[in-house]
Image (tube, rainbow, N blue to C red):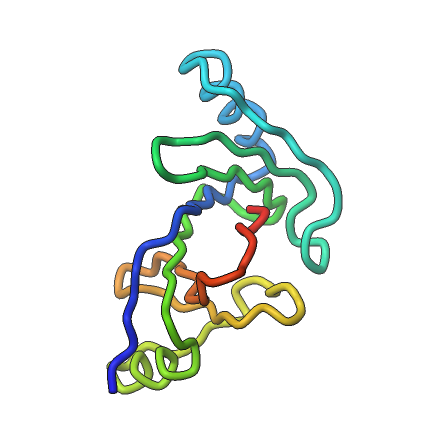
Length: 133
């Protein structure tokens, strides 16, 4: 049996502290997109500040990550069965990397990376709220 995979609607741009304000201003002031800003504690304090824009059919999140030296893009994958997907991916040499960032308690999901090192969250789409960055 093989799980199904589908691209999600959330893309996160993890930004170093020094690039966060300028990047958010670019989307808001230069491109004229409506930016929703949020501050506060993320999961285990990982995200201290985030913002988002509706970027066509996807929500583009900007997460300030103070210990990053360069920006990264993180993607979302939906699956119909996280455990089956985890086994399938492991058979192809792709193993969970949940140490990349803490996941909210009770979220059926795992972090993985593609061969180029781009992180993806693999999670169930049914009844799951969008991630906050």
